[in-house]
Length: 341
Length: 106
Image (cartoon, rainbow over all chains, first blue to last red; front, side, top):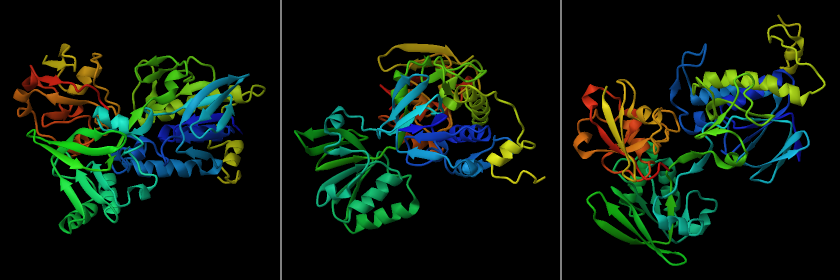
């Protein structure tokens, strides 16, 4: 059980800056994110794409922005709970109790939801039969590659995950790589590797094909692929692997009795509190009249939500506004010598 | 104002006046057309504004950039008339454009 002043959900830029704003006013926070790395959409969707509208930074990539934010919050030594999704919410006296997918329990008066467009989950194959075999013979991520030893594997996708696993598994399995078009978007070096393995007969590449159906009873026996012209090709295989990137889903937060507007959470713009006391929403996931889905708006929302958290975290103290340029308290929290000009 | 017709998977049709300069995605989202999610807000990073452009219109649209084809790889059931609606900008030339929406976006 972890007690904290604020639980921040989401380790994207808005969540990271919330940690900063909480840190400088002396509040401790813990961060949970469903991804295996810090940075949210900036890292998952566009690590290399330049961003041009961060105030005072004329150009930076999603990855650079994340790195800089992490540097900025270093003094607060914040715990990150990655690969974990928040699941259950319960009221516990004046606190909230949040349980994660790893069964970790947080006790906190404040929750800041900085969840972007929701948690990232793998995109799945569209055929109905795929669902039936999921987790048995259809997988969207690999935990133990030994399962595929000496088996016939059909890999779908055209990005790095598809190429990398095709190369890796071709060491000890019979691999067929299927993609909807002849061009692959994965790294050129990986593609070169795959083509070499194809020449040596280690990997079979089928394009432009898509999955049409999966046949089998308990386990998969075969898959039928369909070409653009309608031609069907049937392959005998043991396992299907799909690598179609990630999709964002609001997830269990839907059941937290928050006022929702489509996939976003309604807030008041004074404190960014939702309809539930002590639960705030900032960044892309919140909505209010005039909302702009910009990182800079998320930063503003983080600053206000952090101040609002103070009231519930320190009910017997009064929050005093201070500037970072002059406050000895803040400099102390940042680990800066207070006498430094 | 150009008229854009969005046809949902269940054949429910919406014809909407979309101002020049908006994307076909924005035209849908701002008018509550169900079936275009646009999770990333139009930055060509998610493929949840995927549409099937009417056959007679497909060739008339400005060509895709490379990044769009890459994103279509992860769209739900793409075909050769697939586009990301956030990348189609509305102009007078597009008056009468018809797009069909997939049964779901993910």
